[in-house]
Image (cartoon, rainbow, N blue to C red; front, side):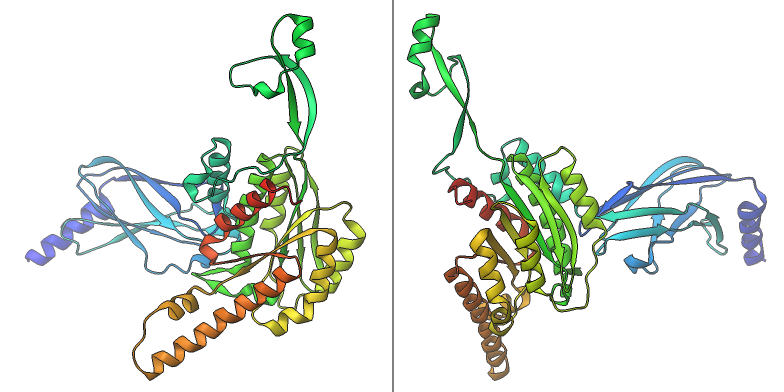
Length: 403
């Protein structure tokens, strides 16, 4: 009888009594690939009892989330509550969020009532806008060193005369124009403008070697996120930025420009890029650069050579490109191999594994040495340190006036 009484209580309060419930999903129009993104749910309700609620969302298939139930703590019969959840997308593209379901029950919990709310939304996951905004903000506030960017002293400068102005506190006294000072009877100084507008191209290899994943994100997507942040930094420094994607064919070719929306164009192009399961044709890349690229440029190439054999097949094309342009090759280190090579081991099996890992690292060093001897700059980095190391190299080259 007690069981039937409680069951009747649940039926009345869940299915007969007039209860009100509304829910809203709060998500940004664009999510950042490879970063933590927060999704919020705003729940409002009016019940005849204090309910127990659980939220079940239909997450996009790309997230592979199963049985993800969010409990909602309610303190009264009338409530307005906000709960949140973080997701980490690993692929660019369109993510479809489906219905939101709320599971209702009383404190006895004999019955559950499922209420479904049609809240279908399609959200784009784009190259890491969080990383781009972070580095852009630090660049505009001159605080790049907070992200691990090294401060470099400018060794040489190429300047053009701009105008003569009155002397202000902080001006270089060595630039005082004595003739203008005598004419105006007040201190006048020459002002110069740095010649900064150099062409910076980001070359992204879309071949099969860039499909290798690290922490769920492919090497190509690490390169996509890094090149977008680098484009923002280079644009801030006054350079013209462009984009080239290549594999067995030439994909995107966006000429270097300094117009206001150039970084936005690069972001849109990067959003649509997909890896091709083909070997990269460096000869085709060289021919297109020779025919289509006018003037000396800095080419930051994101690619991956896993052995001297693969490098030697492409070396003549890389040397030919570096004769006309300043070529920087960014390659990736395997984090697991680096950890294994530096880890103290005991036992015959562990010693064998460590020896193999050390051989892989030595091969990477030989590849970098071979490229450096050919006059090609190299960046060998863990995927997670890619952006910081790339920016450091770019600033170092800029400070030395090598371009």
